[in-house]
Length: 176
Image 1 (cartoon, rainbow, N blue to C red):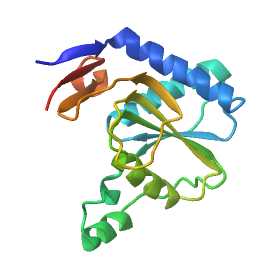
Image 2 (cartoon, rainbow, N blue to C red):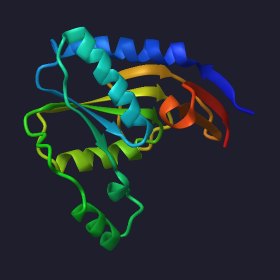
Image 3 (cartoon, rainbow, N blue to C red):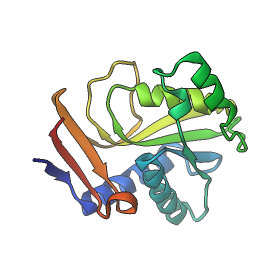
Image 4 (tube, rainbow, N blue to C red):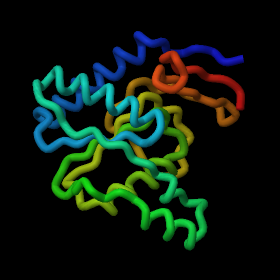
């Protein structure tokens, strides 16, 4: 049985607060690029992009990132083939990247995303925004912008639900 720990209004407030924090820490949105890790991080990044546009009065690039080619459990040949097909049409050189994901857990997803980003250029800075930080890191990765910290047990599962996929916005916690 899953327990709802964040509803639609809570998610909206968290994304709005993080958007204001991004503007404040970067003195605006000049030279910023939002990159959302597929799948749910991408939808959250799009929502943050809309909020940032309202706050600052200008659109900024919001890009999806598929990290499947960068997972650390792929063998060398599979990784080589997957990276060949990766779209590198947007140059991130000298940009400030805000990497967006739904849940930060071990850090392995973020490590893969950093590898993918570095293959698309050399950003001047990369910051991490996550809706939920649940702890249990296996790598030295720390978010810069957090919607909510939720201490969890290792056997618990945190699910972020988004309307675009799940027909509702919510964060739930349950047993794995």
